[in-house]
Image 1 (cartoon, rainbow, N blue to C red):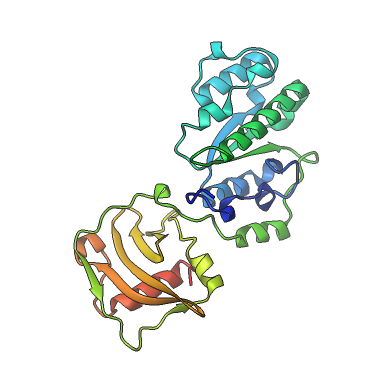
Image 2: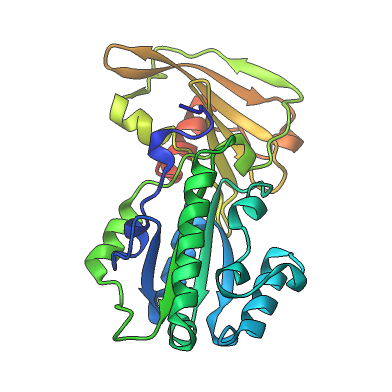
Length: 284
């Protein structure tokens, strides 16, 4: 298996919108568009949004596709060929997780249902191709439209989606600089932190800062490193070792340059700061 993307990193579209369409393309009511947008961002998907209301004829489809995917309109033909080669276009994209969202899907479907079939076939084929490529990428599709044809997401499903652990943060997801003045902190008898195997799995997913968050957290070779979101500077990290009951904290490393670290160690030792950051980000 490609080490860049584990089996746990593939997100089922039904987690975000349970109105099942197929394993790659799903449907969501317009009233839940913001919920979908937030969940896609939480799971590190880059969105490509198609304006279905402007795609009611071939000219509108060509203009929308060309503008969104950066292809010349002259390269788009008729029938199925009006849909560009998504796999070829997205294979050069740095994003590992991509969502194509068709808004006002009802207008698009009403205008030409065969074009919808061509679009769905193209997304499905591209998803398979990208998943088997190196590096591997996940592509999902979502159709958004009005009720009652497009069902709203019930609250129980939203709770399940919010409770689903985010996809693991990888080095390509965040900016991370090198340490400038790394220092080691000697753990004492009172500095104990043991994570069960299940707890370590969730902690090792890491955290990518959103909104006003100050911190990224990322796992690297059994180390959990906290990174300042605004600068990319690593501030503090914990080193873990596997023991029979899980993962035991065996070391703390921190940035000695206080101006770069920008977190005070006055009144709190590095172990306490590391543990507090993990708790604040709900990692452990």
